[in-house]
Length: 471
Image (tube, rainbow, N blue to C red; front, side, top):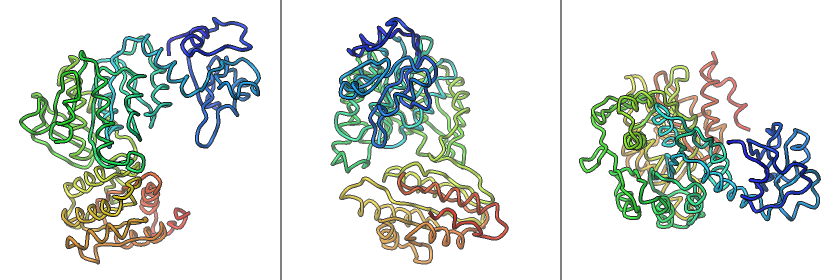
């Protein structure tokens, strides 16, 4: 953040300063975690699901915060310098919106049911080859995280890539009003968070809000091989660039090759070799390339930038664990992302002795469609002739049923009721040169499988320490 004065903070939020000696005192950073407060920071007290920032204002002042931003209802019980606002979340958005309007930076919004984080990182890698910028950190993609990212902007930054998440209609529109994006990317649309959205139609409506909020002077980038996204383009008041492999896309990839840890293709006359796993990442990479080309970066420079891409752990990240190739895709799971993962596993080459294994936990937040969506995944696994299927969770039997109905043999399938059983089965199945895809929704904690595999690879006696991961 550029240096600001407390007076500007007060005016931007509409708040009231109390017990502040110098209204022109400077600050350069906003913090919502009292443990991370540094001297001169503004501590913003946010009420969260598990903690309330108002309970930590004393600690913030002890760490030399210049003041606390607090809600009016809690202000009487909080001592020390304060900025009192009606509600701190709303005030944070108001302040970030004001600050964004002071900075002349190209803002790129990225949304979609899957692939947001990977696309965000690809765009950042591509554009950083020539320009300075920032992007959302971690999963900062909501009404708290996005304002904090905006407040990381400084005058010398030339671009910002902002991930935009949603759980209900209107969420993306609200984030766009804060960020004022000039470029919009929608990665893909499919059933996810149905518990809160209610229907696929509501998801389509919400993701399209990003396109509707773009200015006529901006542009949108969409995967053109996706029929749903093609239709969504009509909602954009600005030019739309389609990317993909089909002839009707402006930016096309040819000669695509997929290996564990490498995606190679030709585009705009240049060779691209990106250290990422999966054909499904191709459209995300092409979105990054399209934005780079549109703002004047040469293809060879984009190729160099994308070659430095670092996959985010837990998001289709290929790693070598002992004698096995493991695709760590444990961060989350939806029907779209699991289907893409299955096709990736099918496409990856294995040695004559190796086998392909899918280790899958539940896909959550699918509401009434959960049983059928899990069954469809099982059917796809059988169709793609994946060698082994190991599932756990509430809907494990739905996946098994789909696989068996489509011809997968019983000896190829196992359903585990708990982590202990899962590790026992996996211990029996594993062979050198196997390729494993590990995936599941966040709450299923499938990263435990990755931890177990790493431990297993270091043991002389198979399965010696697996019990420690079953808690």
